[in-house]
Length: 155
Image (cartoon, rainbow, N blue to C red):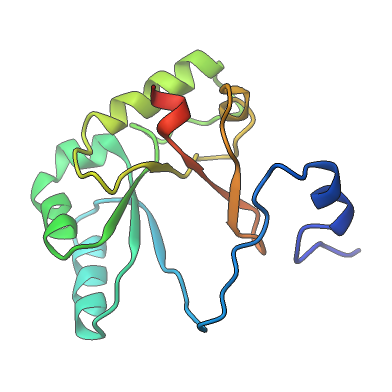
């Protein structure tokens, strides 16, 4: 049994309009954290990032932002990037496209920072990929996670 570590060359050729690779000539690591803000865990993470003068992207759940606005504000105050991770971790495989997009919009209403123009869908992207004119980005090619720009989805 074998697993792809990188996206197969032929898949990239079949879907040439997708962004499959992001050049990284500077030996940078892109840190991302999902599902927050969560008491203790997010606060500890922010302390560690500050300790090492590191920045990250936090893909936040709208419901958690509502429950923990002070922790969410700490993420903003520390100048980290923000992303949308749906309002309540809605599963893209088990819901209609319309419901999923509404859930994304509800989360986006909680994120007012101008840096929050990206979406990291929970449980895959089957329904969100049906959104018109979107662009799919795969910066974490090795684990098959997706990050999408929200401009086409929310407008």
